[in-house]
Length: 117
Ligand SMILES: CC(C)(COP(=O)(O)OP(=O)(O)OC[C@H]1O[C@@H](n2cnc3c(N)ncnc32)[C@H](O)[C@@H]1OP(=O)(O)O)[C@@H](O)C(=O)NCCC(=O)NCCS
Image (cartoon, rainbow, N blue to C red; front, side):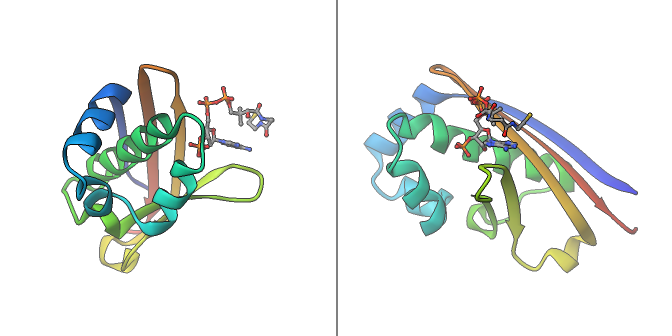
């Protein structure tokens, strides 16, 4: 069954401004793998913002916040994004689906979680 859904939209400029003001922001929010992926990209703040949105969308889907780095977005070799959730059993999640999209100004993400209640 569907345990929850979540969606989030964020301004790319907001992530850029915070990251430039606070050097610890990236490490607090993103895993090493996420930072590595995004910083290699030309439009790195678009990719970071989309991952921020994916985490917020995940929090909405589970109905609460957990540590930012306990949920990681990574990409399959096809480019398709997937969520890695630390201790996913505690939320009874069997399948986590995520989709992200980003433009110059905005990034969006949607999450659908499946499992047994
Ligand atoms: C995948 C694709 C649709 C992305 O669309 P886009 O308009 O260029 O870019 P968007 O901003 O909307 O989306 C980018 C995100 O799509 C995701 N993505 C990439 N490949 C994907 C795939 N095969 N399936 C699902 N999502 C994918 C990634 O998460 C990417 O963001 P990231 O690099 O920060 O992780 C486009 O690259 C494409 O058409 N690829 C070839 C065909 C394909 O594999 N299509 C699959 C969906 S029909």
